Image (cartoon, rainbow, N blue to C red; front, side, top):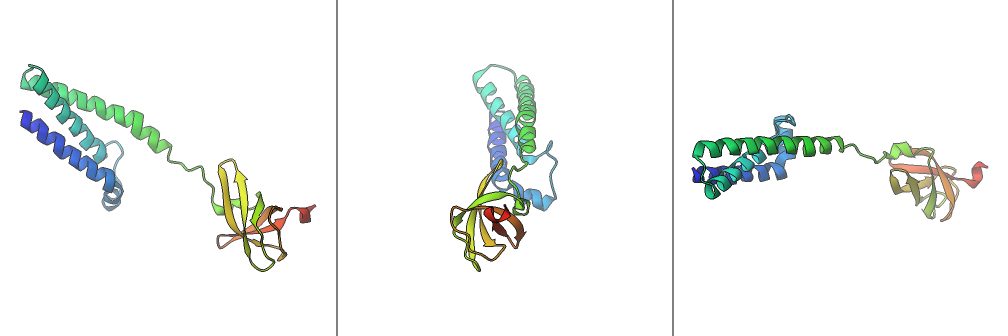
Amino acid sequence: MLDIYWWMLWISLGFALIFLFLGDIIDGILGGLDEFFHPLLLFGTLSVIGGAGVLLTKYTGMQAAVVLLISILIGFAAYFLIYYFLVIPLSNAETSTSISINDLQGKTGEVITTIPAHGMGEVFIESTSGSRSETAKSFDEVEIKQGNKIVIVEVKDLIVYVSKMDDLY
């Protein structure tokens, strides 16, 4: 019986590693897998059952049926612990705090690379979700020197068009 637990442990660990590294590809091919019956969780549970079976068989004098029953119970406990304390919280935490470049219109920032009248420079924008730098052009087609405060007037083709803050007052 010990050999069966060893085989279960190694084969399920192998499949769990395959799903760990190639899970997104396999998930895409299969068209989305249910989180509760995800193969990584299933093979992880089989690994726990196999490992518990090895340990209980090797280090206790219990009967094979009792070892199997206890191993299955430990496996199910591990499954639910992993699912409720790891999978669910991580799936809820997947939402991103970053903002799209198109959401920058109206934000203020500072020029970090001088923007020529008919060329491009770079601006630095701070927000609650973090700071970022973006390629910028002058909306008014005037030079805006490094260190000037700016406001983003429009966003086109991943380039922010800015005006100097002084020009607005």
